[in-house]
Image (cartoon, rainbow, N blue to C red):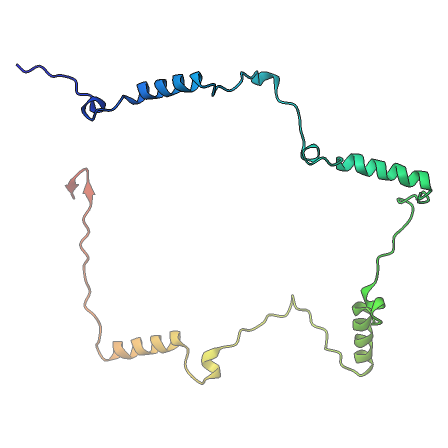
Length: 177
């Protein structure tokens, strides 16, 4: 019986095994001082924001400083009770010198009423709309009536198809009944 020997690919090609090569490289780096300093990650890094990184004042601090500076020079607005003051919305139509659409429409309707352009009142819920019949509008018979007429004509001339008995098969539990 032949005895199987374990074959190591790395030995066959004359190279070091990857795990041994990695350990060797780490040891070599340790000897040359490429070790990072030990960190306590649970303590966390100090908080540094983008404003500190670029050497600028934080926006909220700058705004507070500016408001304080304006207060010192007397640039205070008078107090307002905004809940009590009703703001009037700007009217685009007045700003361009045109009449408001609602008023213009009412004026036009009143003008038309004066000239007699009133439609007669209709009760739309009570009035049943009859759909237009395309076949009548072109002077042709409706397809349903034309088909019935043709079948009646065929019956009169003896073009009846023979009666057929359709075979019904029922399969129940693999047995055809």
